[in-house]
Image (cartoon, rainbow, N blue to C red; front, side, top):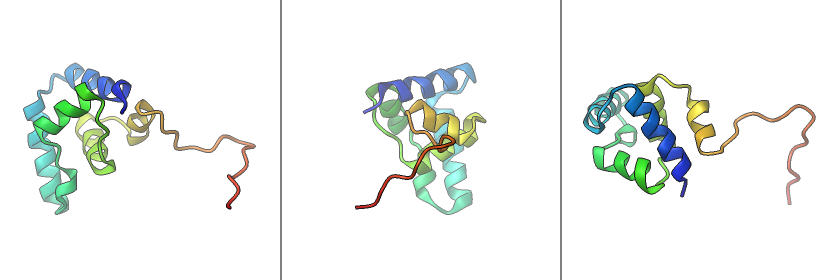
Length: 95
């Protein structure tokens, strides 16, 4: 669970003046455009993500990124997921 990530998503949504229902409707349109229901973020699900530390799927995070106008990588970082490999680092050895 990541309460920090959910709180950041809530902060962004509220800063944009969007309601849970606004996000629900916008994500529904995205899911329909992409013909993939996984992009849909219901009001109830977003409430769980924001307040209960529930992790969003990659699809739902992609929807929120687009709806909020925030880079996907920024939202991943809210969940402490780094997407770049630091210079000079070595790949993890395979077993």
